[in-house]
Image (tube, rainbow, N blue to C red; front, side, top):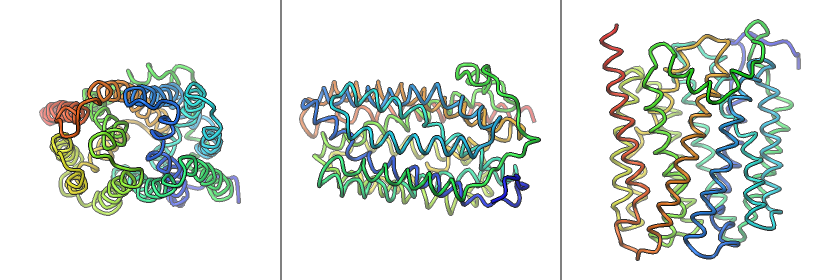
Length: 409
């Protein structure tokens, strides 16, 4: 394969999409069983919630500091080498987790995994490189669709294997990631031409500097806060879902795998097939607001329901919610030139990491406080109510922002 970078119009983005799919497949495999791995060392529900929160937060903290660094490095050296390094690191991390002799080591190893967790930001930059501005929302939606495909296959397989032994999904995740690395090494072309690369700067790699820079982008402003609250809601649900359903409904890894399988299907249907038409009809601003509204309402319903089977019915009711994130990402992407896509996507990843840390610590701590209540107590849904409040704040901020932008036009 020639090392020459082809024009963006000639690059086939399926390579990076498959890479993202295999990446998320590996992550999805361990979601239903990570709480069970923690439970092997911490048998009490409150201990499980606190340690699980600490382990997930450690991963997110390292991702916060390293994602903009990886994004800036990809602006300097290209997307391909950074993506490959991240995928290789992820595979090795999955294997090391099976060898952890204690919770402390499990926390340390998971934190090391967060160092290479900025690959999605680089993948977003890759897609931004090869797509035209008017098609960027749809193109970034394909990344979301690959997330969904990974969550269709990963949690289901993880749940099935976790019923046999909690370590089996980690071994399979390691194998998948290493196969992903081998595939990318052979098939993944570079997307960033030499003339669009920029010198590395530690200032741009500083996550705090980049977060501040996001608020200064043209026609973006307060939308950063909306994105932050929405990510907080999303990560609160993600990090407490398995623990919450185990406490509230007595779900097994397989049942959680089925529920996450349904989430993946809805994500793929919206982001892979419907998103382009939705954005063309509504525009990116209205798509984002309708998606945030849908998520807020469904999160409230997640919290109040007392029957596990109702959760399965509610998941497809939020299909429009999966359109909000790529619509907002497209707005951010259009606010910068081609040379800064990696840094901006890395900054968005850092914003996600900050919200992941906050959501994980607050959500699992809240769950630990209410976890001793008997099944059927509405307070067991407290993490979902907190997520619904955050999503409501995201909606209000977005409405005000788009209203102000419209007045300026």
